[in-house]
Image (cartoon, rainbow, N blue to C red; front, side):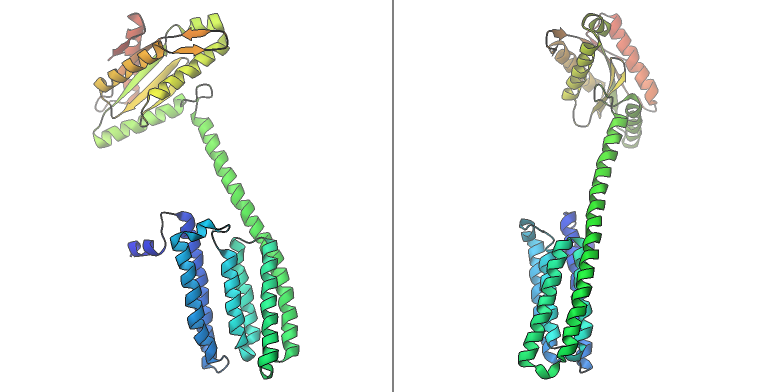
Length: 365
């Protein structure tokens, strides 16, 4: 059942799916109006030619629109929803029905309002006014045709009065509906801006301002998540504690602004070496914690040595100086049933070992 529904309304394209749902709403209205026309025919109010015409015109129009939507031809048009085109077609169908409606013509005036309701999804006030003018024009054409070919079927005084009332109703509806449509668009824009702002605030909450790596709080959340995933799937992951060697000397010699530049460059170097599944964060000061997912200690050693070499052979440049740094790295593979704090402590202990053995090296626990 779900597969069959997906063939009718494709769910892989949400915008097209929404347009098709609106199309089917309009199709339902067509069917209801056709059913009412049939009831009017049974009550000897509407002529059989109306029913015959509806059986030809309504399927032809709706099959055409469905093909246009399903083939994606609508995406080449200014309004992919084809709202105006569908409304103008519905008005012409109503014009045909009213020509044969006899004394039921006054009731069919409500159909114009029903048609314009669908414009609230897309149309602005100016477009509503054009549609209203087209509606009045079709009604006027009906009066002219009836005057020339079926004068015995109408009372022109009533028709002109109905035309005037329809003009007032459509004018008022256009203004109100246009205002509602504008509010919907503003709400949509506001929602998009709010979503963008929330996303930006979230990024600010989880990122370190200086290095653009994850901050310590969010980093620990990710490590906890990785621990849970490891226990659930039976996989392993490794942590690397990385610390810039003699970073205090950089600040003392070049100043804190250059030191910040070095930190940013160092963080960028780490990110450039990571896989898409790995992540890193600023653990504190010049210390960074790297999480290598689905990686055992042997794989972590290979990565750490590559990163050490990459940092050693890279220069961090300001306008006047080329600054060279090295990094010490401590590794730890997370053991079964080990909490993240313990794994981090072991990586930190390995880092201390690397520092004590002369720096610019990789050690592990």
